[in-house]
Length: 435
Image (cartoon, rainbow, N blue to C red; front, side, top):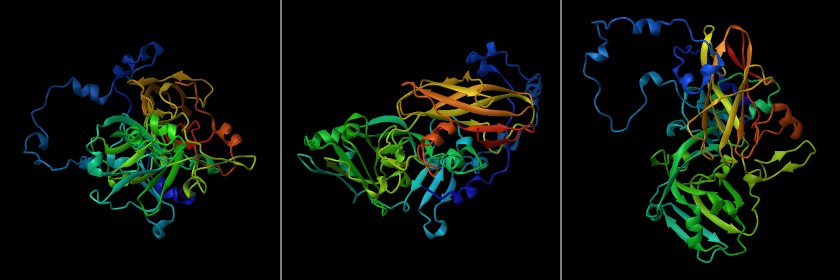
């Protein structure tokens, strides 16, 4: 987990104006017309639509465009959409830290591969796929070694899953006062991709697990020796050996040439650069599951093996460092997820949780996947405390910050799934707040 004092370098950002909504068509589709939300009387966009087409065209409409590229890149006008970098120890260990997804700049539920968050313990290794192997050994009837080319011959499946670092949103728990930054800087250790690979159950069945085998130790090939153990039931349930991300081979910082995926469980367990799966009778208690990723409790004890991530949501627009330029109609947009399965409902509040109303879920909710939610916001220029609260299919409800603080030690920082508050002042400036 990064030290708190590296966070300010992530959160330096000027306020970004949010354009008022010029149409309520999308709100009508979600049934928001019945809520009596008013539309803006007129806007420049509407006025322009009534004018005739002019004869003078912009340069891009009259000159030949750029030629074909062998690998597409974002538009140059979007060059500011980047991950925020936090180095835990500065230049002393430049590969230790994180690169955070700019949640406030994205829409939908799929994170572009180049913007997927990266939590690294000792940098990204340069692995030659021709020399890399995955070994399945320990309490098995037939130990197996797989080259990358071996695995590419197996039938594959594709699933859309989120990955969240257990330390996501930790600044909002351990900082005595709210740190000001973007949604991505504060909560950007969460991303969602279309992953393609081989069900781990297929390989376990081929190796033949001994009846004494109850746990699996997963080890990475990076120089930090990242390793985590997990119950073997998860391996047979929905674990995936991922080789592709969003249609292309997994990128180096995401575990090239292969990574483990344990849907819904804390991100560090989805071990990158996977090289070994050892079947054991008991948990291994490695350095990565004892020295960190445990939850210190208020009574002096610590909770270990908190695998499943709690139900959670964050409003990404409007959010920290943004600004509403004038009173009017805006869209609230955000993401919700749960380690227990599907998101069933998301509610939003404009008064710090005193009252709640339902948000619209965009599309069908999928298990262990981000769900986009939306709601109208009619801002009249008065201060607001904007919140979202997610509920999953098992009835779990996103808790308050007060509840988390009461159940954990003062320095507890992992598994913070508490309700996030964005304060909007009378000037329209959005800031991080505690309630």
